[in-house]
Amino acid sequence: MLTEFLARITPRCTDVTGLLSESMDRMLPVSTRIKLRLHLMICEGCAQYRRQLLVLRDAMRRSASEAHAQEGAQLSSTAKARLKEALRARRD
Image (cartoon, rainbow, N blue to C red; front, side, top):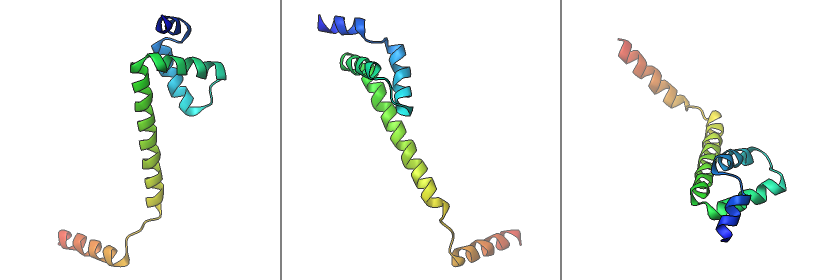
């Protein structure tokens, strides 16, 4: 009975997927967040979709952070010399 009532007052799954993506980028209005939470309580599929979005977002953040950390990384002069020598040896 409660589940049926919540299903009637909450957004449809197709709307929820868009709202979940949007909520990653900006703060949704309070009323929308409440409806979204209620929907996630009764819909395991949308709850799983939300968890997957969070995993993807965290992976992208880690990847971007690692890429940023590697921007300043440079080869040592010894490593550069070895690479140059290996390239010369391949040409000859």
